Length: 381
Image 1 (tube, helix red, strand yellow):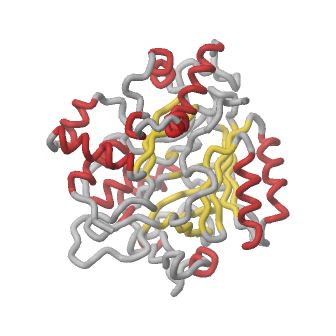
Image 2: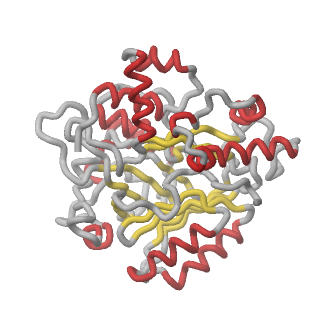
């Protein structure tokens, strides 16, 4: 596999920021020739390194309850669990690897989430699932599948343009005491559905994936983006991405635990990102459980390579690839007693009680349902 060039690395960083910039602003930021920028941008999407998705504000679409679940099914029932979760209309993310799955779903009520968990419970191993359920009308998901921070760290760029992007929170036009937006007309509901389906319709029609972004959208859909009812996100697929100067982020590390009394999520995030150079792509803050998602490399970076280790955790996440150890190093915990995240974070997860549960998902297996946070149907359809 060839390595990424510096120009490719810089273009990917600019696109991951998913800012509503015009192309001229992106060209100015990336500081490479126009022809090179457009060639790299097209290549990044055609090779599957990047994909555009549209993420609805959960409250705006009447599904304010967001559940994050780390599931450990029995080995012979992994596909069954994946099919059950994928079939639920509220599922927006499903990642599978080894004997672990990460799922995210949106529901109108907590009871709906509980029913889905009950469906998969008989197929799960004795280890209980790690579940974080939050309401999306507050700052409960400060980072939601935002890969800009970790990518900038991988390629040694200083600072980020827009990281972190979260999910939900305050938005223009949302009522404080209602689960639905004020005055969402039938045409606006249609526009929401069109945006959410846009990447999938484009693929069916054979339209280039680099043309799925927000440039050139009709006014009704641009208005949804401006009001925050739907957000545009550019998603990184590390399983398809070539390494950059010998560094790659090809392992997903999930850390979950109970917060200590008085622990603050903003303090934990600051300690991870500033002191430990760990940039979570996912951070969910529940009342009694928090969930962090980071990425690391299956092999250490080469000696003398410039820049920091992948996602700030490559040296700590030395987990064999699945083609060497299909079990993911004993069900997801790295060998030799070396957890994947905590040594690198230098105690950055001290806000969690006891020894946080740590799981590694290898990303070299295609997920049953796209590893991208967006509904593939209009809400309620």
